[in-house]
Image (cartoon, rainbow, N blue to C red; front, side):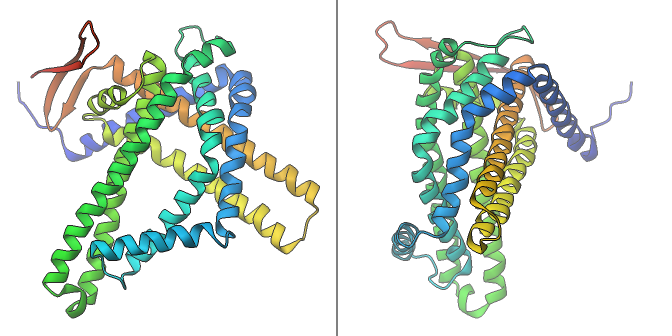
Length: 343
């Protein structure tokens, strides 16, 4: 029997087919429990959606918070040896300042309403009955693992940013030593674009690991860094599928944020509509934002189920089977994680 290796088109088609299948299943789950997801879960996420939409408007018009963080980061970048006249680091510094400011503003809503909304979706999809609607006691029973995992996720995101900055520091100082910044501006601009791509890849992979760790901690009721480690193992060979699921959800959320800026923030500064109708339209946009947060959580849960259903990983033409064994000492001094592979 002749043997043929899979082509590149086949390797690209498999993650796309899995992505489409998970999206279709997520929409089906949404329609099955439409009343619960559109009323209970979406309304639980509504305060967080309002806070994150308002935070961007407040941050952009804030005369103190963003400039303060921007100046602190500029001093840190200059002390680390980054090029002071680079447009790449100017844009990166500005976006980081806005993100940090918005995160500070929305932190109380993130640690309460956002996690409770995610817990309600995870608890609803963690049962075989399609019409299951969890009670508030069952939802709050998995809140603590989600809170612990989210706290650990924050350290992972900070570590990912620190790793990216360290690599960029080494790369740009290497280029500075060879005179690329002064003698060849076009080459320096090309390396700046490559640095932006590298930073995006590192941050995107950290975000999908943290997102899967939240779902895993809610399903298994165990949070912390162990959930993050297990999510890293589960993502082996499936990173492209996870990224293809995260891209449309984040694009939709970014589009809703842009819609809020155009319809509400611009109208507020221009004063062309009344405050009542502006508030009603703003609440509608925030509710739409909550709907997509719920849909993103449903897709994450279905992606987690697909990882659990197929423990075999196909990567680079080989097939591996892994098994995770967690052995904890009786006194609780340490936790041992064993991963066995068979080819």
